[in-house]
Structures are given as structure tokens and as C-alpha cells.
Amino acid sequence: MAAVRTLLAGIVGTGGSPYWYTPNAVIRSPSFHGGCLHPTHAVVYVIVPDRTLRRKESTRTLLGQMEFDVVALKRLPTGYADQNPFAAAAGTIRETYQARLAADVEARLIADPTLASFQSLGVTKLEITSDDRSAEDTVIEGWACAFLRASCEYRYGYLAP
Amino acid sequence: MTDLELAAELKALRESVERVRKTVACLAYSFEDFTMVLTAEAAPRDAAAAGFERYRARLKAREART
Image (cartoon, rainbow over all chains, first blue to last red; front, side, top):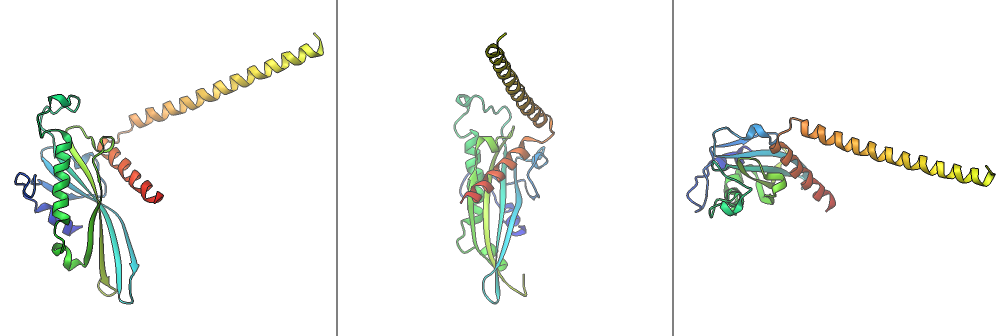
């Protein structure tokens, strides 16, 4: 989780090539709630842990699987109104922000097929298994928000967990 | 009143009582729903937490189905 946090904190937004938004903060939290919506920050990532499974793979190694969510948040511009989509200028609708946030996280976490950032941790697989931008879950007043589900597999020896 | 008339009266009365019982049960259920909604509205859970909980619950339900 610390490695994921470090990696996401290294994002520098450059207009979409490769990233859109520079995060003001990347935090780890046991759950996502209103307290994670910073009063002044514009872009925040919240890493929320979920289940961790381990199983014996061979006589010497264990296979671990860790699931976590990344809640990507961007403060909406002042005066942004969901209720009048006809008034929104191009590129400024909530869905656009959500797509850019999700693209930033995905590009940062899984773009490198060698998983170089996680190699020392024994990570062999990292994938985004779900990307939820549904209105019923993610609409928070004043924020664009996307929930990304990630799953990570790692191997380690019995003596070096 | 003949026995036949009395039986008919009793049957009608029993049906009326049953209708009232059903109406009261429906009202009770409605009231329960209503109080549940009121409780949910009054609870200080914020929208962010509620949305995230729904999202997690849906993910786990989907996993359970597969």
C-alpha cells in the first residue's frame, strides 16, 4: 500500500500526456467518508484497503492477493451545476473529470508491464478490476469522483513475508 | 333471524374483520418503512461514505454471484 501511495503521489499533470492532474494529497484511509474531502485541495487520491488472501503455492513460496480501492477525487469548478448539462462547456462535465482521474490512476499503476516499481515487493500481477463512475455511488456535491478497484498478486518465501 | 341468515351475517362479519386486519398490517408495514426512511435521512452519515458503502456492497454481491 505504501508503494502504491508513493507511486500515485508521483503523478505530475501535464494536460493529459501522460497525466491530467497533479494530486495535492494521496492518503491511506481505512474507509472513504466526508472527512477525506479536503477543504482546499483540488485533487486527492484515497487508498482504501480491502481483503488480503494468502495461499501456499509451493514448498517454499506463498502467494498473496491484496485488493484495494483507489478513490480519485477532483474538486469541481465553482458554480458547476449537474442539473443543467446544456450549460456545461466542452470538457467540463463531471464524467470528463472522472474519466481523466481514472486514466491517471490506471496509467500510473498498470502502464508499466514490468511492474518495476513493485518488483522488490515480489509483485507479479497488478490489475484494475473495476472502474465505477455511476451517479448513484459517486456523485458527491462539489466533487468529481471515481472508484477504482485494484487487485495485486505477490509471491514471497516463508522466511521473508 | 334464521340459522342461514345468522351464518351469512357471521361470514360477512368475519370477512370484514379480515379486511381490517390486512389494512392494519399494511399500515404497520408502511409505518415501519416510513420510520426506516426517516431514520436513514436523520442519520449523520455523509453522502461520500454512503456511496462508497453501496459500491463495496455491490462489488461483493457481484463476486458472490460468480
